[in-house]
Image 1 (cartoon, rainbow, N blue to C red):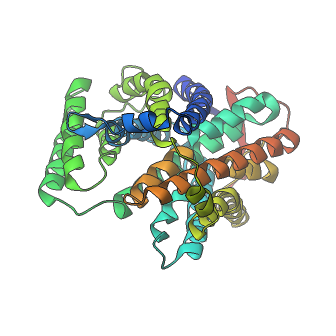
Image 2: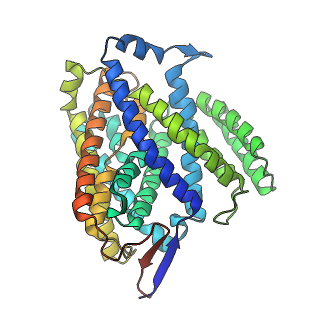
Image 3: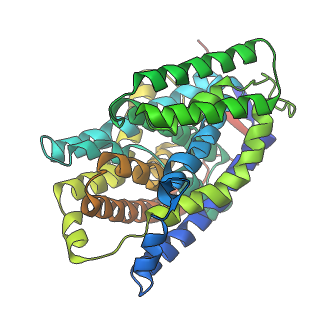
Length: 402
């Protein structure tokens, strides 16, 4: 059986390291935010996020403005993976793609089953996405106890998960459309794509266009963060794995640390200030809470593993040489760490019900903590590589001849 060798690019390794460290910082910020919200300083702390700056509350600037930069980075990472990364080879990409789809459909179906026809049905998108930072942070704690290819698989799966969440946000969590602004957004995008085709590589031209596109998207009724993803695919990318002069490569490298250590911690502080009161605790056990918890903790691993088994048995894709089904179950459990995207969708799903939002966020935290803990313990005891230890630099995949 021929062996296909995959080498991780320095850009991807920097991405892994920044996401892993960011997971630790996110956890610290979440704990701090919860403590402050339930302390004597709670009122002042929560009020601070609603102070208006340039006509908009600070919370909106974080969730609609800074998170557009986060989505820009996600778009750049996805674009790199499609061109030169794990997703550039269809045979290698199929397993995380199929697994991600299973991990999207099953949790959403579980939540829908519990909440069909109720006021909390819009929350079905909440348990769909995986938090890259926390998931890779847990893998970092395991070190060499797990195969290197598991990190690639989980990162690819989480990026595809985020893409699925972006599509869901664009389709189902947008308000009434202002067609003139939406048309202006598309017009700016077309101009930027033409710049790309004409060979214009000056990054500032795309960033200025991106700001204008964000403003029009913000006014259009489609969530403004989608502008970040559209901008990512307009920025020139050189199809050489390590062309550091490529505008896309440069911007991704520049954004990794500010997003990991600035924007995401701010998002955690702004969105996890949950006042734990009786009403919130009661709603955790409601149909919405059960749908979120079961969707993340049970639905994610079940969807990821079953979809992977079906794809492998049908011959659609192959398992990496150093992975087995125990590893994929561990990855599925870590896929249940929703956090960033789940909280983000919660804000969109229930914009007018603060109590349900708080209860949903608390359930997300509980489900993510449970999934992360169980996933860590599972991989610690059952995640050892089946083959000789391999350096993260090189991971071998096995495939049968056609």
